[in-house]
Image 1 (cartoon, one colour):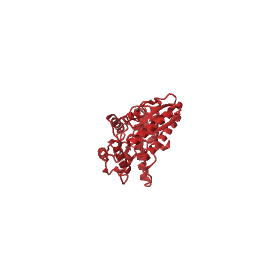
Image 2 (cartoon, rainbow, N blue to C red):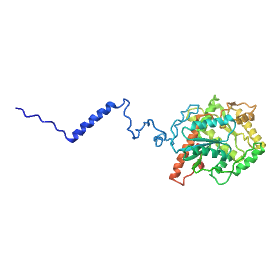
Image 3 (tube, one colour):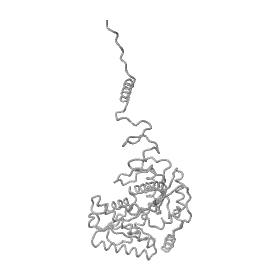
Length: 392
C-alpha cells in the first residue's frame, strides 16, 4: 500500500515571489501599448513631459531647456509672425512692462501685438510715453491684478544711451535725481518745434523691479537687420550696408549711439560668417537726430548724405532703418537721402519674431540676475550690467 501523498510546502519568501509575479502579469495585461505612465504624484522620467499639467505645475523649473518659470520656448526660427507663447504661466510670476515711446496708430499697433504675443508666458502691460509716470503707474496697477510678485521693465528702445531712459530710472526709483540731461534735451527739442512734457512724480509699488537694457547691439537685433538686408542684397561682398537710426539730441549720447551701432554692424557680419554667408563689403552707420535743433539736424542730414555718396562710389548701398516700427520717422530718412541712389525697403525691427524672443530673453536674464542677487547681495544689478550684445 502506497503512503499518502504529501502536500508541497512553500516558504514565506516563495509565496511572496509567486504573488508578485501574478500581480506583474496582471499589470502587463492592463497596461497601454505605448508603455507605462509615471504613477500619480511621481515625477516624469527624463525626456518625458507631464501630461494634462495644470497652470503652475512643476516642469518649467529645473528643465534642461533652462526656461524661466512660466516662460514659453523660443519661436522656431524662420517664422515671420508673432505667435502667442503657449506655455502655462506660474502663479506669482514676474510681470513685464514694455516701455514704448509711442507714435502713430500703426507704430503703437505693433507694440500692442507684441504685448499680446508675450502674455501667454508673462503677464504684460505697455506704458507709452517719455518716462511718463502716469502710464507706468497704470501698467503697474494693471499687473498688480495679475498676481505678479516682481516687475521687469523692458525699454522698447533702439539704444540704451537715452536721457529718457535715465529719467525713467528716476521715475522707477532706481536713481535719486531726475535726469538733468533730459531737461536740457527737452529745451532743445522745444526750440526744434517738438514740445514734450515730462513727469516728475515717481511710481508707487511694493513690488521689486528691474530695468533691462534696450536692444542695443544684441545678437537678436543683428539677426533682424541681416534678414532685412538679405531681402535686398545680391552680392554682399560688393555692397555697403548703411544703418540709420533716429539718434538722440545731445552730442555725447550721439557718440554712444554710433558706437553701439558700429558694434551692431560687426555683429551682423559675424553672424553672416557663422551662417556661411558672404559678409558685406562694409557696414556703416549714422543718425538722423530728428529732434535736435535745426542746425544740428541739418548737419546730421548732411553727414548722412556724404556717407552715402562716398559708399556709393565703390559699391551698391543698402539702407536699413534702425527703428522699432513704422510710424513716420522712416519717411524722414527718405527725405534726408532724396536724390541719392540706394536700395531700401523701409522695414523696421517690428514686426519680427526676434523682437518677442528678445523681450523673453531680457525677462529670463532679469530673473537669473534676481536669483544671483539673492545668493550674493554684492552682485551687480542687471540694469547696470553690460548688455548681452557685448558677447558677440
